[in-house]
Image: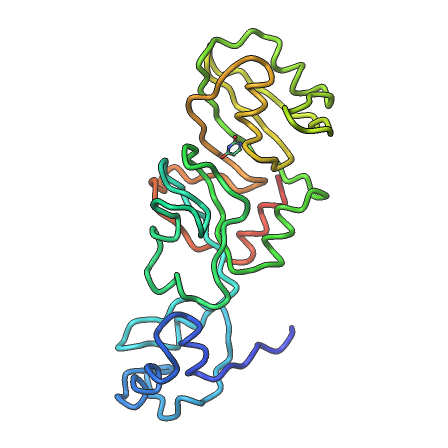
Length: 245
Ligand code: URA
């Protein structure tokens, strides 16, 4: 096993959003930061940055947040945007305030539209993020779509063909699998992540998506007991299930 990264306590806690290094030094001077129950005396003490850090390091008796790499599975609600820059409520507003100033910063793994709900991964692990969205990996993403008009029966073949073109693009879509769930309800599995892909696919076959929800990415399924706006921290091993799909 490789040796854990070591970090100065003041820098580590500042990067986790607990304030400036000076703020952290004040917490230490006040005896409020403990490691395995003993107050830390030196804010410059080197600490091993391991996933179980919260079991050891506490501030006023409260376990610290997990260090990077952090991977979250979120149930994105409707009406919330994934972008840091867009106006309106952001997915980051649904997380603890401190996490907005973590360094490295958290980002969503790909995006869901404001009007799409469901499974969203959020991470500060750039390597994980790029592995999930890499076009070479073809990680399947499964959506449940509610449609404005009844399905005609021709959509499945069009989506599976590998020749469907989206408006304004010059490269056909990879084959996608459609499962009809009802007259205006379908489950669609895609392995790419083009802009508004599901909505544009149904538009390309003359329909209109009125509701969209992501149920699954690879081997990760949105848990039934995770309500809109809630999130769960995944261990590195749990997160790897995304590549088992
Ligand atoms: N396709 C869409 O059209 N919107 C999403 O949010 C995700 C996939």
